[in-house]
Image (cartoon, rainbow, N blue to C red; front, side, top):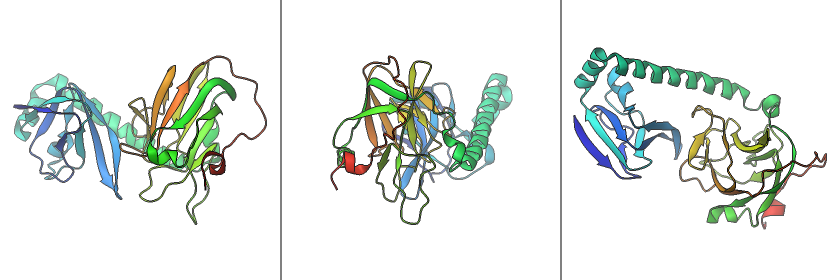
Length: 278
C-alpha cells in the first residue's frame, strides 16, 4: 500500500482513468463529481477512514466512473485491487463499513427517484416553515457575475425562494419565486433551487430538489447529499447554488434571529427589474 499526499484542489483521479486500485482516505475530505453537459455535478464526499473508488474494483470495471478532487489537503493510501478484496474478506469491520456505505448510496438513489417525481409537484412548498419578516436578514451577490443581476443587498422575508427564470418553451417554476435569476446552458440553477426558511426560532437554507444541489458554508445539501437543509449562523453565510465553481454564490447575513413579524398577505416577491438594470 502506497501513501500519497494531495493538496487542496488536486485530482486524486479523473472520470475515465484506469482503475488501478482503491484509495483509503487517511485524513482530509475528497469531493466526488461527474462531468455532464459541460458542468461538474457533485455527487458527494468521502472523509477520513473511508474508501474511495471501491465500486469499480468490486464490479471489475476497467475505468473510473467519477472524478475525485481533494476538498482539503488529503493523505490517502492506494490499495491494489487484489489486496482490497482480500482485506474485505478477512476484516469483518471493513466489510460491514463497506456494506453500510453501499446501502446509504442505494437509499440516496431511492431518494433521487422520489425527488425527481416531486419536481414540479404543487405540494413542493407544503413545508416551508413559518412566514414573515426577520429583522436583520438579508441577501447579496457574492460574485462579480451575479452582481450584474443583484445590484444591492435585499431584505429577506421567510420563506424566500430563489430560482431560475424559465427558458423559452419551458414551464414556469413549481413555486412562486421571490428572486428569479437568469441562467443559460449549461444550466447551474434549477427553476426552484433553494429557499431560506424558518422553523422553531432557527433559520435554514433548504434545497428544493435542485439538480446540482446547494452549498451552505461549505456543507453540501440536496437529494444526493443525504440532507435537504443546513442552518444559517449569526453573521455572514456563504450559499452557493449549482455546484462547485458556480457564479450563483450569495452572502446571506443574519444579524438577529429574533421574532418573526406577523405574516403580511402582500406579495413580496422580487423581479429582476427591482434588483438589476435591464
